[in-house]
Image (cartoon, rainbow, N blue to C red; front, side, top):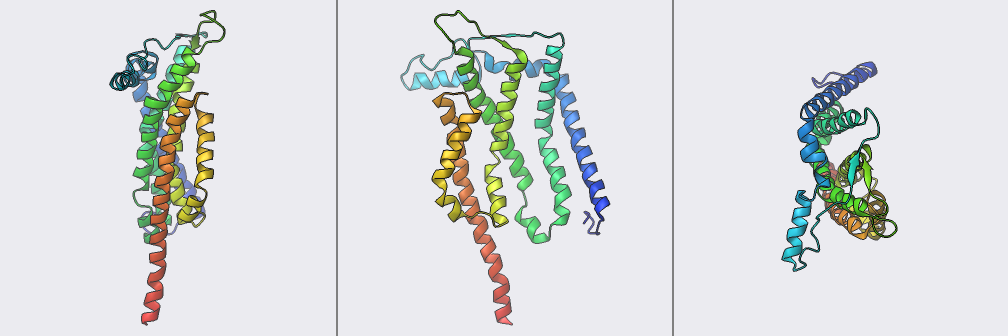
Length: 281
């Protein structure tokens, strides 16, 4: 069904989907061009910033260490590595990659809105109201996950991996390839943004009847083990980073239980309404 209420054929649905994808691609390209135009600022103040000791996360950690009476134990003075580029077009390709990722992040709310605009005409008013606001919730959780990955997970990963040494002394220096560093930063931020969609996934599964709050509570321990395994996969092999990722995921799981319980109550209330109407007749 189209936005004006008329029935559409299968080919017309495909045409609508094609234009939704085209508009989304244009938004990503526009964001990419904007990011490329400001690539110097993007690299200096965003991408390369976690490699410097004055990065905001390191300064906050140092401040917390002083407040806790630990002195300079939590202060980062040197991340422990430098960058290198080994190919002729390496820096240009790195610029394009960063611009694409930045354009994708900037365009994500518009892309989600295009997806909703394509799906919503096929829903009845009750279904449409039930999932109202989901686009903004998805965008918010994605951006929240990106921020968490960038300001928390990425600095911890860089600090651990960049300062890790084999053998004794400084026999092996860390000269990190630029594209390896960029890959670490972008993958950490984007995957965390995806993982933060957990509450909405649980909410969707509840509304289609696959899971419920009782199921989520029963298998809470199993879910926590799965979260720990997931955190161990997407983080460096140190306990601190694993805990930093696991704690917000635990919280998101508990929020998912509350959302699932609320959705189930609404479904039961809606199911009782026709019964009352029929008995009154």
